[in-house]
Length: 340
Image 1 (cartoon, rainbow, N blue to C red):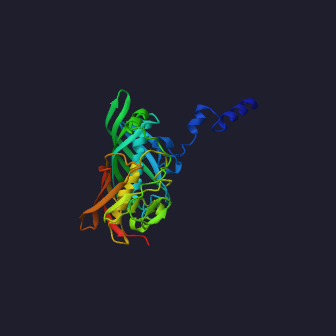
Image 2: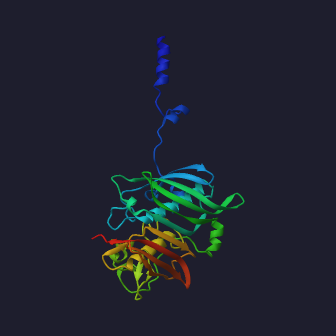
Image 3: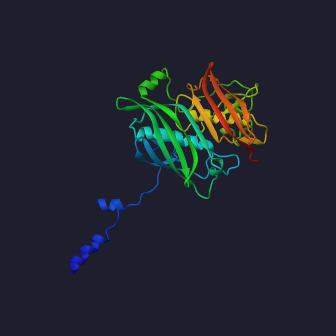
């Protein structure tokens, strides 16, 4: 071999990776990142829980995701487990992501979430010594098409961690264009944050125009996370979320988000209990009937349905606004001692 031939071979075998050739690109490691935040309707990258998606069959998909070891809002009373409502938020993100990325629903379209339910395994939500890497299987059910555009669909989701199922559930969504949504909303314009919430209800902790009760009464440690205001009627509260909350109001809108209503149901169920105890909603089923508006009082009511020998409770929660149902929710789970 001549010196020239040896030099040419050395250049070939030791070419730096990423130099631009196709073979070089194939050797690059696949790194973990989140899916585009726009596809799950989140403004903050920190609130995106999905990391990848692969189609594995007709309307069947395998996704990956991650839950952090600690979250500023999705947290359990003892801090040792992932919050079951984080599973619900992850499922909401799956529905929106699949619609945009796999079924070509354009960005800018709006989604009506008609229902969302989940069941979790309480023991498998324990937080380990590293973030929880997730595998999700999702099946889109009963899709409805308008021409070539997906207009309505259901999604059935299972969330796995370390080969074990930690949650199962899903929901149903309708996709509408911006023009159609504006007609449905009667000309209401999106807002970054509403100026104030309705002020009826007895006084509690005051934060600007917003009054709340003792956070511990609702299973919370911070008043900013409380979305209910006490009233003089037992088992009845006024919906009063903080419009500046960085998680609950992560992006603008012209109505109260569905996840806020699910949090209101959780807090109402907790408020039925005696001090020092909290309800862990290991399962929850929610039907959304109409939009919850910012400019009219929305009343949340809860009552206990059953108490099982195991200590699990079932609580029924409803939201009413202007004499009409906004949502209906049923929660079930064990009662545990609240964190000190």
